[in-house]
Image 1 (cartoon, rainbow, N blue to C red):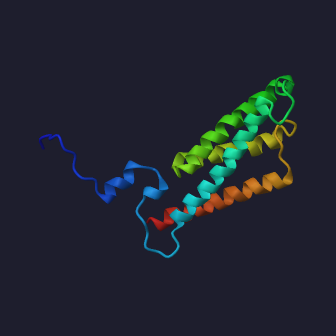
Image 2: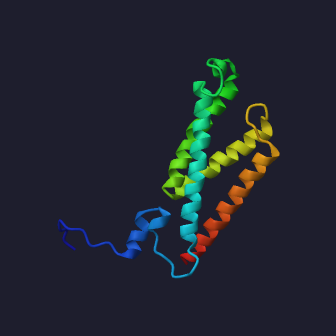
Image 3: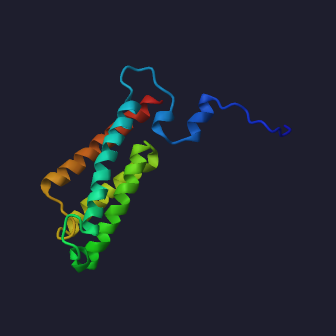
Length: 153
């Protein structure tokens, strides 16, 4: 087939593979569209994780604590705060875009928090309420993701 300067028009079937964004997938005809629910759940999580990431930056920059207190803490604490300041905001952007990588980054951030809270409670706060809240968010995310994936098949 000779090459021409024009591209063939994209069809819905080929469009599905061009993006991993949930809102660009074909719409199901059912009453409850789980893809829509998943998109908005991810956006609510994005807002929460933006606040979590910005709170880590507030600690680093000395906004919530006296200036110099961050530098006086242990290297482990400093590394952990910088890690969460970065990964939480990256995950929030991916969640807001409703992309697959955003959900994976968010799960990585949540699991990192839970694991560090279990093994290093002096560095990462991990009260019972926080752990229960994170586990509940993870369960809801995984359930809605599964329902959205089933809806497309």
